[in-house]
Amino acid sequence: MVSTFCSILLIFFVVLVVPITNCDGGGYRPGGIWPIDDLNDPQVVSAAKFAVTEYNKKTNTTLNFVAVMKGKEHKVGGSLYHLVISAKDNINANLKEYEIVVFAQVWLKKSPLKLESFKQLSKSVFN
Image (cartoon, rainbow, N blue to C red):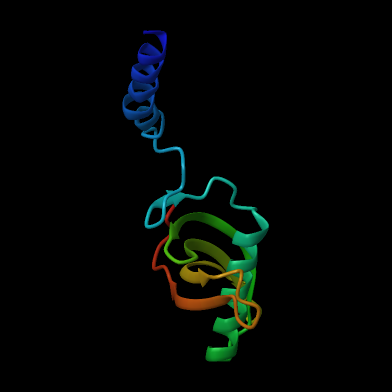
């Protein structure tokens, strides 16, 4: 009798309680998009600096990375960083904001980062 009761209690726990505890949305699931809480995270800053370096190579410009202003991370076979960064041009020292997308697959040794897009914002996202 006690064994049957314990079995029923175990089934109840596994079927009803465990799924409820996993429904809080606290875990990062593949395909999900989350705001980046720590904009100074080394991986985020590294992705932003990489984007500026690649953009400078492709466009023969001299932008200098200043800071990550805001961002989201999309988990899809790696991390797709959607970032708004600020950067200065060496020529006129104007601070401008750019929207960038960098795909990071840190387990790849040869080229773990890929610049997907880099565009100047016409107005600040904070005004």
